[in-house]
Structures are given as structure tokens and as C-alpha cells.
Image (cartoon, rainbow, N blue to C red; front, side):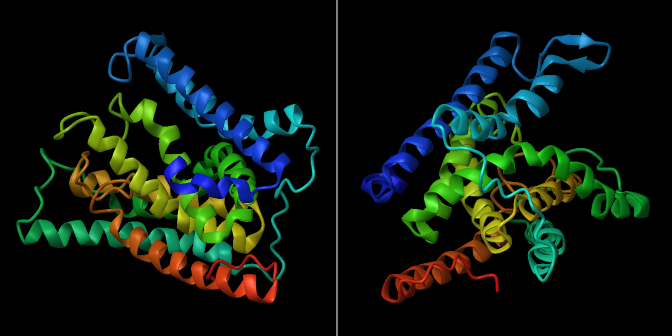
Length: 308
């Protein structure tokens, strides 16, 4: 985090600097404590059953862990007397449909591009095929993945987006759009580290595990966070970001059928699947850098990160 924000943290107003530190401490603290409980009770692979077919990890991950950024948003507002303005809970749909299209179709295209890239590399013998027989998704599965899947996952993804994009990114925006996107992406990656170290997303059967997984996840969250963050800034609402995140989780789950699980895989957070996100993210960052420069000259306050 220091390497990205560094001395630029001094550019934040004093109350916002305190709020950023408080938010990060709460979000990462809850994640670390939850990860510690999971590790002490057998990790992800040997998590104890709380009820038939329901493990402790299956309960804690989608609730306490994934909603810790939302809790950090609320806790920071309470602890720093910030109040309840600028929650970004309004959909802002009127005249603002492009971020929603980008969140749904754009995310689906980027995930699909990563899967297609893996297939192409596999055909060229550059990456391994998935181990074992992989079931076909089927027409019904494809329709569900592209429609109801994103809707259902949007509600789950809200816990993260209400924290990362609706709060932290907005606070860091004082550093400039480019620095804000990069910094919040790194912090988002670090938040994943406790479960990545236990095999989440990549397993542990890869060279330099789990350290390479921690690095890979951080690269992925910077790339993906730049795209989703740009969508959130453009819409000035949490909902397109939650839709993008929900679509990512829904459509991205199909990547396992293409490559299996691993650090070199078709999933959006893996080495091959992240490439389309990194390309689009780089374009956004370059445009954001030029925007930041022009804003300093004109004194403008527009937050368009390059998705118009």
C-alpha cells in the first residue's frame, strides 16, 4: 500500500486521511481475524461441518469476510463522525445507462476474452489442458450464467462494493483518479491474502505457493479494480460496480470448465484470464492520467475516468 500511495497520502484532507486509515484497518482486520478462525479450524480444505453439507468456511466467507468492507464503511462513518451523506446507494439510472451496460455486457466480454485466450494458448501447446473430464455448461447453464447468475451474485458482491468502490475509492480520489484506482486495487488485493494463502481461487498446487498466489491476486485486483472502479466513478453509484462484480463472479465461474483451477488459468484472477482486464485497465489509467493533468490546469472537478 505504501508503495502506491506513499507520500501522496498527505494530499488527503486530514479527516479523510484518518477515515482511509480507519476503513482499511477495519476491513483488513476483520478479514485477518476471519482468516485466522478458518485457519485454526482446519483451513478451507478441512473446514468443520456446522450442519450437514454446510461447513464453517461456507458460512463465514460469504457473510463475515465478504461483507467486511461494507462493515468498514459503516464503522468508519460512526467512528469518525462522518455522517451518512454520499452513500452512493442511488442507482442514477436516468441518462446513465452506459455504466450498467459496461458492468454486465462489458464484464462478460472481458471474462469471455480471457477464456478464449486460454483456449488459443492451449491449442498452441503453451498452457496445459484442464486435468480430468470437464462437464459442458449447456445452453441452460449459459443462459443462467449470463442472466440470473449476475443478478444473484450482485447482492453478494454488494458487501464488497459498498466498501471498496462506494467508500474507499471515493476518499482516495483526492490523490487523482489514476492513483486512487491503483491504490484501492492494491488494498483490495491485500484483503484477499488470508484466504489466498489457504488455497482460495488457485489451490496450492503451483510453484512458490502461496506467495505467487498473493502476488497474482494483487495484480488481478488492480486490473479488475481499475475497470470496476472506473464504472463506479462514471455512474457515481455502487450498483453498476456491484453488477460488474456479480457478473464477474457468475461468468468467471465458467472459466473452471476451460482451464481448471490454478494460477495459470482462464479465471479473471489468474495469469491468462486477467490479460483482457489488464489491457482495458491500462487504457483507463492512461486516460485517467491525462485527465488528472488537464484537471489540474483547468481546476475541473469532473470524475470521468475514461468510460464516456
